[in-house]
Image 1 (tube, helix red, strand yellow):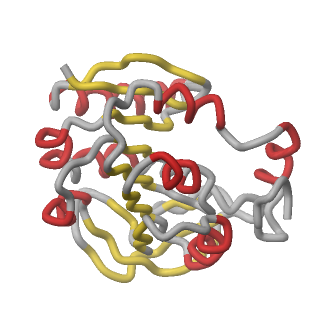
Image 2 (cartoon, one colour; image 1 turned 90 degrees about the vertical axis):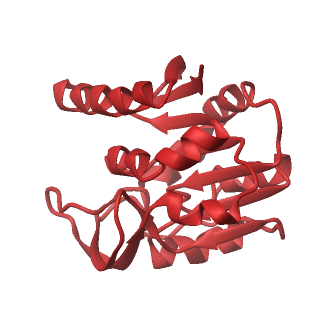
Length: 211
């Protein structure tokens, strides 16, 4: 346990980043400052619950989406609340079954649907669109997305949800090089088409709100 968080023993990424307090607290505080109503939040790429736990304390209901079997088990240990739904699903722009999920050897947060570097298969997971869940939502006030460059597909599969409910978005879109910058432009083009614009940026997270 590190700073009241249960983390896989093999993880080195989050262990180092929790030395100075809660992970991404400043980004969360800033993103939530733009939210006006706190009925429903969605955490996409919930990992072991870093955002889910605080969202549960502020919103009436939280939906958490996380594809990793191990991460889901740790999330349930870290989030002691009764107002969230946890789906072991990878969100995308299509439906599919038994898709390979890749992981690296030093971070439980580096999970991808496409193989990169020395990643190996962590498990197999089904794909769904966020819009496949829209009948379960009366409204959506906030969505956080952090999925290691699956954000573009997730946004495309969430068009109806975003257009209908107009939630505040917090999307991890780093710009540490040309490849990441081009990827952010692709995601932002989609969001602009949906009526969203960039409101603020904090570290790797960009906050979007709708006109």
